[in-house]
Length: 262
Picture 1: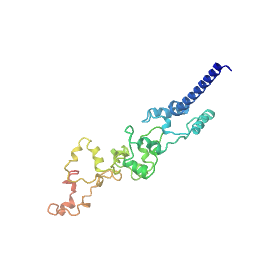
Picture 2 (picture 1 turned 45 degrees about the vertical axis):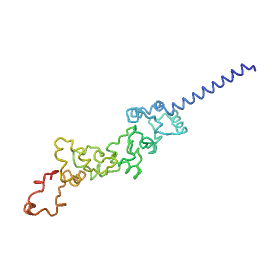
Picture 3 (picture 1 turned 90 degrees about the horizontal axis):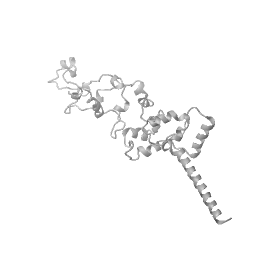
Picture 4 (picture 1 turned 180 degrees about the horizontal axis):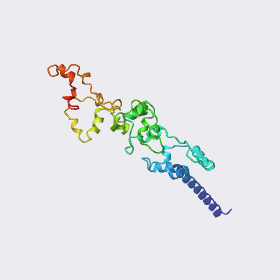
């Protein structure tokens, strides 16, 4: 075989090989890194729409939904052969995947490792992220109903919130989940952050108020709609010179001692 022809064959062979490798890489990159590939399955339209309007809309599918080539191939074959009408359970997101961003220190993502709520629920109770953050596909903000999955008594049982104005609030409005120093039970700071914003209520909480005990000492929204004012529980022996016994027996303390000012 003349040398020029042999050289041309080698060049063509390398060209075909290179083209094949490039095409294979492009195909792999498309199927593994381009969300449009996932959308090509007609059953994914709802998931796609929700993803596009979610906080993760700039994150590729496989960044969270990790699947091996074998698993991905099985999904494609299932779609082609069986033509399913809905998306089956696949590529479940483990907590470790969420932690890559949300416990990474990357300021582009909300960091949750040090927050009080995640320390209790994720670290101590080992509740996986998707239990609270993905009760429905591609909706990551936990709805109020999610808390009721575990806290049944407090959300729809005997300890449900009794104060109507508070009943529509999300649980974490009072139980400050994302604070690093939160006790998770509402403290004075959490209560005042809202109540000082209510017209006319700011004056009820003067900075120099002598009593600064927790609001929950009187206000128990999961038990009663009205505050439990039990002054004598602490003040067992009021000063007799200014609190004659007949007055104590016939007059409520709050007649003279105005709530929140005392």
